[in-house]
Image 1: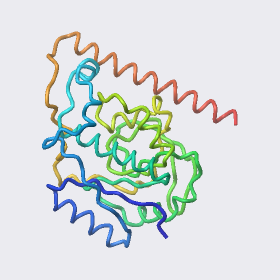
Image 2: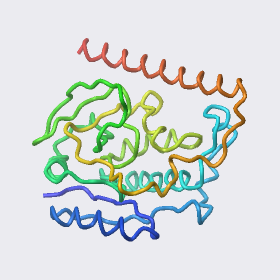
Image 3: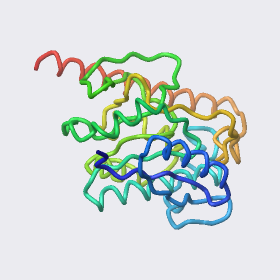
Image 4: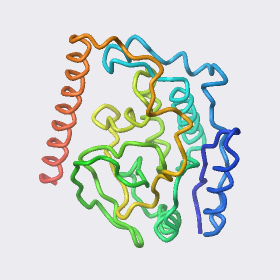
Amino acid sequence: MLMYDIYIINLLSSPERKENIANQLNAINVPFTFFPAIDGRKEAHPLFKKYDDQCSQLYRGRSLNKGQLGCYASHYLLWEKCAEKGEPIIVLEDDAIISPIEFKAFCTSATSLNSQFKFIRLHKHQRKRFSSKKATEIDKLEIHRFSKGHMGTIGYFLTPSGAKKLLEHSQHWFLPVDIFMDRFWITKIDSYGTIPPCLSHDDSYESNIGYVEYEKRAKRHLYTKIRREGFNLSEAIKRTIHNAIFNLTKKRK
């Protein structure tokens, strides 16, 4: 029996994606609700005021495009909904490919998870190099803690406490939402995911939020490259320190 609401982020201009994801979920008899995505290319949403382009250029050497801002706003609004409801939710994007057995197993067993897990990625890990360690298991799935975030926002499980953490640390936008969500050393929400993954990305659909192309890049001066590499190095160091402290704490318990 399903206990948590499932929300699917879908642009009104993408009816074929809506139909495809609906067919997948209906096939495994899983109830869901469509959540209208914010189309940043067509509307200037009030949440966009949180975006700091100067900071994005400073640390990343590029701007977020309007589609990326719309994606960020769409997820942000669902975090608010989760916090207001006071109940965990599952968020999916409409270009997800669902692994029927694994996804239904998670949906029907998620209520057994303890408060340790505020945020669990359900899709395939998309980084080339990472490590993971089993934290627990539910039904046919293992929940692992990962040394690096998954990249992407294809699908995840989120609790109200996790939503509040994301909202708290998301008042100043300068990164794509998936990269922000991977900064667990900032949000204090450790990186957990399922093995095997419950979802993957449907590569037959082109991105309609523009992750690949950026609207504006800083001039490729040497100092721009140095700033960006410095930021990336700083992020890697902070992640490494956080992981070391986490592992040390676990060994002492």
